[in-house]
Image 1 (cartoon, rainbow, N blue to C red):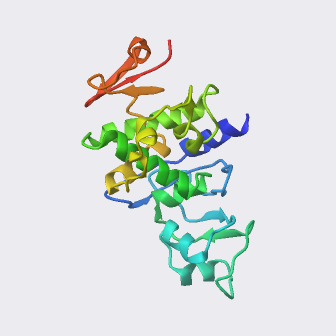
Image 2: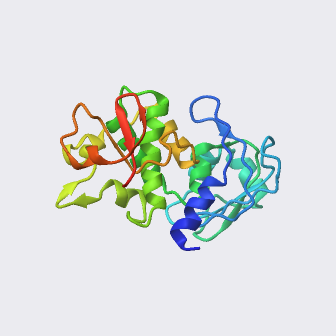
Image 3: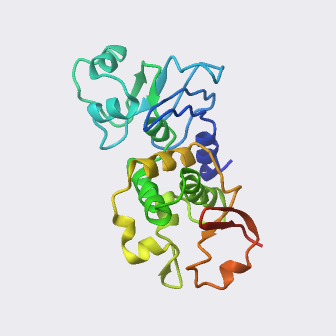
Length: 235
């Protein structure tokens, strides 16, 4: 299995239990992740929490940032790993001792960078402001569906920033609204999409028929409609 598909398979192996905001998730994952970090959980029952997670440190990480991402105190993390100081090194493997882990931390454990999570949330915010939460997740899912397709680039950032004939594929990148700060709901929607929730039904495209000027996109087979957006796939 190539690197791109291993990364997608790893992300989809996580079971989310979201209650409100960026809350903890109960995770059950038997495969080792690929990319920025590795996730290991010995719990087989998806209704139970992970008793132990491991995370591989990469360049730019700090102990305090990892603690925030994984909802664990610095003291507990240091004790679990017998650390004498807060200094950590790329490649170092840390045991995450607590059961409650944020969805943000789970996404990081599956090889998605902080910058990519934020970029996906910004795209969702720019494209789907005023839409339902389901509609926001569906927009994010289109990006993840493209990531799983060999016809699109190999990273979230490359997909969002992709040009076709010198024009960006997503209008918020073209007009600059991609730089708007995402709200909490858009961030939660990004995390839901990263964890495998796909209200779009596998769509590779979405558009608002009231404003879309591209005639070609209107010829694509429609998968579903959520709010103001039509979600479509390739012929």
